[in-house]
Amino acid sequence: MTKFIFITGGVVSSLGKGIIGASLGRLLRSKGFSVAIQKFDPYINVDPGTMSPFQHGEVFVTDDGAETDLDLGHYERFIDANFSQLSNVTSGSVYQTVIKKERRGDYLGATVQTIPHITNEIKSRIFKAQKQFKTDFQIIEIGGTIGDIEGLPFIESIRQFKTEVGIGNAINIHCTLLPYLPTSGELKTKPSQHSVNVLRSYGLQPEVLVCRTSKPIPRTEKEKLALFCSVPKESVIECRDMKSIYEVPLALEEQKFAEVVLKLLQTENRVSDLTSWRHLVDKIKNPKKTVKIAIAGKYTKLSDAYISVVESLKHAGYKNDAKIEIKWINSEDCNEYSRCKSLFKDVHGLVVPGGFGVRGIEGKLNAIRYARENNLPFLGLCLGMQCAVIEYARNVVGLEGANSKEFDESATYPVIDLMLEQKNVKGYGGTMRLGAYDCIVKKGSIAHKAYGAAKISERHRHRYEVNNEYIDRIRDAGLVFSGMSPDGMLAEMVEIPENDWFVASQFHPEFKSRPDKPHPLFLGLINAAVKLVKE
Ligand code: GLN
Image (tube, rainbow, N blue to C red; front, side):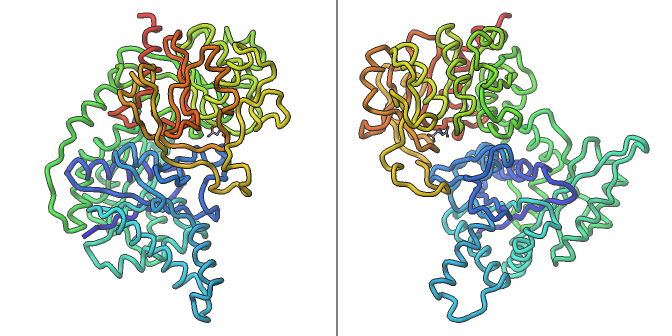
């Protein structure tokens, strides 16, 4: 039978509940248990797909095409499992279902209310996921901070759920912050006490407290927290700031976090095997060199907008005993080609990530041209591949003014165009080409060598694609189309064999990289970049 672990947060937002949940997932996995996750987000958007990356960071995409919160990426990377549509639940999607049922007449004349109709729908999402995942444990993280008005239906649903499944089958881990006051040299516990009080006022008593802190928690303060929050001392877990997020599971393991959880969930403890994770952390802590990679994009002010890209670069770095230093480049700074030389003189590689809209495009084209002409290792992702094709069409094939229809409706050479099935799509939410699709890799190509496979599956999130009318001309000029959809209709990867590493993909490889299993395309980039590092 599945046991349920709810994770709530108090005191402040951005506490890293996702990392704490993901770390617990990793610890349970290392004991041989299976783990699934769900992220409940109280906002009204049906999914984060329509939100600006500036506001909400990256949109993570699952195999089955759900556009989800970026925390799902952490969960997949830590737990090393693939999740689904059922993992992402928002108030918007819950209300949408309930209102659809109401319009159909399913409620037979009843007044449709938050309790029980919305709360029943929330609980049914938990059970639906349980049926699909069938894991030993299901971790359910509630976004936002305790006390937020919009989070209330979710908190109420947990209260009902816990009562229904009974003691020992579901627990609530509450994450808080202990602020440090430098003037008195103290860690303060009062905000945590208050946030537990708010939780209690909704009828929820947390079983475990995880406290974010910049300093070790003194024994007396732990005792105080245990006393005021009514949890045993061993259930007050310290979560110190770490240099790398991948150190968090080990720090929590030292305090027997998973064991505490297992006891509360009346499950026998098992020995854990964290050998490979320890090995990974050892590599992270002892890099032998530093590789500097430029990311030329539009959302560079908020690194969360490219979190999976950054993590994937780091993963490939670990494998090379290298620390990755990111040089964020606002692509508009490359609008003049002459500036590229000085901007890229100190980097060992360039990534042009995904994105939408025309702003900064000319700069991206210049950055890619610089990488192509100067043999700077380059990886293009989605929009990055579209830009690589436009750049090649303009500067090598000689199609002056070549462009994507996304940026210039009346381009003379629209080398990137809307996909056929996108032409009649109305509305923006959930309507892109989303999720995993197979791709056939050209034998003997760089990509083929990197993947070691002729057929791969990768995740997508885009509306535009390479216009097939131009493929022959571009190919004849030297750009290799190294990945195609199985029906041969969609270009999925391009590369330049003469360069040390110039590869771009229409899909998003960053969604499938794991800390101990770097993605082949990122590994290829970093393997090439490392060679440029001067000892
Ligand atoms: N804007 C481009 C498209 O819709 C690229 C999308 C992306 O980079 N995810 O096709």
